[in-house]
Image 1 (cartoon, rainbow, N blue to C red):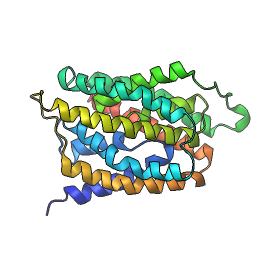
Image 2 (cartoon, helix red, strand yellow; image 1 turned 135 degrees about the horizontal axis):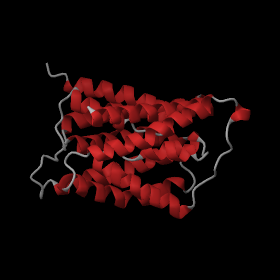
Image 3 (cartoon, rainbow, N blue to C red; image 1 turned 90 degrees about the vertical axis):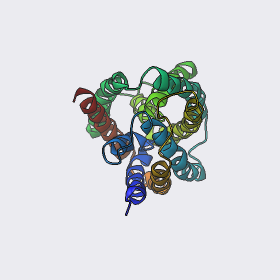
Image 4 (cartoon, rainbow, N blue to C red; image 1 turned 30 degrees about the vertical axis):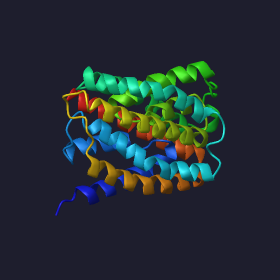
Length: 261
């Protein structure tokens, strides 16, 4: 019996339940599972990851919207920046970067120190914690989202796993950042998946997603994302920051290991 569908469903459910409270879709941790366990080839693994985000995203977003956590303009600014970036990233992935090791190394160089700093800051006593550095200007925020969108288009990670640690590191509360980061991830994944579908007509590389695996993982992520978003209000801010820092550090270690092996 083929275990791809039940295995993908279980992987998506478990990963999204853990990552959704911190504003991370889980695609970043699902990608090595697709490569190593399910044998999805490059570069088809990227659109498969985007398909996971498209199917899984509404679960957490519906719950956050129900709780009123999507109010404000943070999500809108992140989406406006990441959308054009993901299209550019998809084109780069297909035509210029079939093996984006340099992007993995850059992501590792960013997330390792940032994740470690978030963990140390969350564990430090309140009177020893540095004061928040404040919010980014709208123009800077949009530019940052554009860059993250390009990286997300190249690697199929949506961008929330990068935007979340950066914005929380600036002092924004996780409860505000997480819904906005997941909204940006969902929107960019939807556009990115469409871009890869169009690029498949003009590229000789296999950029068609693994539909059964992507849908199975996404269905698990849909349920897990809802459960994770429902769990978030019950977690203290310090615990959420520690969770986000741990996820960022783990992701940095994972990408560094993949690049250097």
